[in-house]
Structures are given as C-alpha cells and as structure tokens.
Length: 468
Ligand code: ADP
Ligand code: MG
Image 1 (spheres, helix red, strand yellow):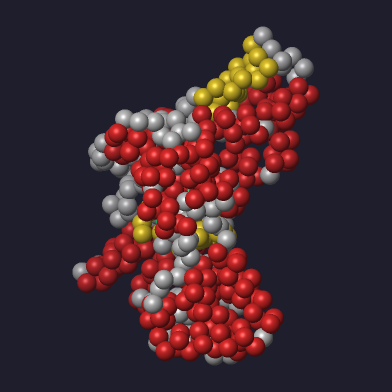
Image 2 (image 1 turned 45 degrees about the vertical axis):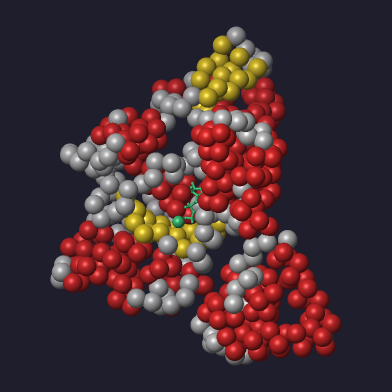
C-alpha cells in the first residue's frame, strides 16, 4: 500500500472494518491475520484484497470472511463480493531470503530509501559481532496460535514500534517452540523497515565468548563500545550466561547503558527470569522490569496450522489425514514436528510414491515410538511445582522446608516412574543431588502412598496429567 492510497474511500472503509474486527477478535489475531491484508482494488462490485501467503488466505477465508463481508457491506453497499488473492509484495522479506544465501557483499551503509532493494543492505547491517539472521525465520512464516500469541504480539510490537515499548522484552519457553524464530523475525522486520538501525542478534554463548576474548586481549573498551552503539540488541538463550560472574557483570552494565540510552533489548531463555539459576538477583530484577512473555507448549490446532504452513512452503500436497496424524502424535515441539514432516516428504520423493498414512507410520516408526511416552524431568518438575504452588527453582534448591522438600520428593518419584532415567541422572537434574537422596525420596513417597489417601490421590492426578 502506498501512502497516497490511504486516503481513498475504500481504504478509509478498510480502516473502519479492520478496527471493528480488531475489537472482536483481539490484538494478537488481528496482528497475524488482518494486518497483513491489503486492499487491491474495487471494481464492478468486486473488492479484491491481497495477502502474502496462501496459508493466510485460507485462514482468513475460513475464519473471518463472513465478518468481513458483513462489516464491509455495512460500510459500502456497492460491495457484492470479496476476493482474496495471494500476492507477496513484501520485497524485503523475500529479498532478504535471497540475498542472505548469496552471502554478504560488504560495502557502503544502507540508506533508508533502499528498503525496496534489500540486497544492498543485507550483509552491511549484519554487524560482525552478531550472527546472521536465518531467512526462514520471519513473522510471515510464524504460525500464531493460543500458546504463542502473546509472545508473537509482543515481538511484533517491538519490531514495529517507533519508540521502545518495553525494555527488555524477555521471551521464554521450552526448546523448539519458536524463541529463536521470533528473535530473528524482529531482526528482519526492523532491518526491512528501518535499515539504518543497527540490529545485533547473537547467542549468549557468543556474547560470553566475545567478552572473554576481549578480556584476554585487553580490549574490553572496544567490546563495550560495540554493543553500546547498537539500536537493538538481541541475545538468545541467556540461561547460558548464568554462573559466569564477570560476564554477568558486563552484561548487566551493557544492559543498563543500552536501556538508559533508550535502546531496545530482546532476550530469550528457557525459563522465566525468576526461575533462571545462577543469575544475580539484581540482574533478575532488571530482566523482570520489561515485558516477560512465555511461549507455552504447542496445542493440536497450532501443530496442525504449522504443518499446513510448512507443507505450503515446501510446495507439497499432504493428505489431511496425514497432517492430523502427525499433529496428534508428534507433540514434543515444533522442531521435531518439522523434522517429521521433512522426513515423510523426503521419503516420498525418494521412492516416488504418494504420501499416505501407512508410509508415514512406517517412515516415522522410531520417532512415533519415542513420542508415545516421553515425559521429561523438566515437565515433571514444572507440573509438580505448579501443583504444590512452589517455584520450579525449588526443585533444584537446597531448601529443606517440608513445603518444598515433599513436592521435590514427589517429583523425583515421578521421574523414576515415568522416565527411563537412572537414579544418578535424576539426582543431577534436582540440583546435583546424590542418587541415595533420590532413592530415599522414592521410598518415602511409596510409604506415603500406602498410608495417606489424599496424598495418593494427588500423586495419581499428577501422573495422569503428565501421561496425557
Ligand atoms: P527455540 O529457539 O524456542 O528452541 P526455534 O525458534 O529454533 O525454537 O524453533 C524451532 C523450529 O520450529 C524452527 O525451525 C522454527 O522455524 C519452527 N517454529 C517454531 N514455532 C513456529 C511457529 N509458530 N510457526 C512456524 N514455525 C515455527
Ligand atoms: Mg533457540
């Protein structure tokens, strides 16, 4: 959409219609499904809208088309039909995808006017202290559902805001649920919209490595300056910073300096700031100051949506039955789901046969068996902590108060029952405890199960929730 178009009556109507719908469906859904829509033309009673992907079109048609018709009919009685076409004019996202693979070409700094020629800026803004952004990880390729809509909306907000909306944005969630994807998407979006802004993305490990090297080379002033001249600093997997005092200290200072200058910081971790272990309290409270958004485990609907979107991206038709089967069975995380889909597709292409339920089951035999019953100790700890209303970090802490010691024992007992981990392995996951402690916990819980009905019911309930 160009700025001249904004003033046409049809554009003005669209603003009204989309505002009304935004109120109905909520901000997150609006951002993912309606915002990407643009008005193409209105001719002979036919209003044409466009979206960037086919998946989006299908989604809008399935969920919002009736409301769109009704609301728009109210604004403009001339509209008899609404058509949605797929048209990707997001030059930026596309161009980025192409040019990154072609490698960085170095050279002069990009000007804001070059947005439409992405090849000119990719590589130049990829500051050498950061890591490159993965071209697949864009907002367009991110499927939004209940478990991630909050994190998604927060990420979009950061990417689109004129001024820093909250600092830092702290995204957390289990492995393979899309944290890195969202970080990269923020990076792409900002590079696309305002290429002169410097965006740096790097893993916490790399941050630490850089810092330690700077220390060794007695070059910490440069190191600090590099980070402090950044507009948006994104650090992935900050749980890996924990424990290293000097790095934490430096991180903290860099963090404060950037915040004070009104720069945006985005962080990801596998736990919430309060649950991060080995991180100084003052750093934790700083991390809690901005917006903390978690990504929950996937739901069936989200998994199905992701499969549809991925299948479309790779351009293959997969029977609905197969997708439903996969969405039901591969529940661990999105990464695994993607892997399963890729395997099924690769197999079909290799043997030159169609994808069917039977071949899928055959190809994924091992994965399916593993997914049938795989509960992690982390899940157990989380579930049990939630149930008894204690912190997950108490599962690892040395506190011996009954209120935390008992739930911890229950979690150890369930870990023994529901996973194939050995006693020493379980002990390690509970703050490095000895295997005899785990053995003692298992016995204690068994005793209580036999003598205390209410307790037995609690444990049974937990087991069922975990096995589900
Ligand atoms: P994390 O950093 O949380 O471990 P990633 O961001 O690396 O997870 O995601 C793992 C894989 O799953 C990536 O290939 C990513 O593109 C994909 N993925 C995760 N969530 C989604 C989503 N909602 N829509 C599309 N792809 C997703
Ligand atoms: Mg990641």
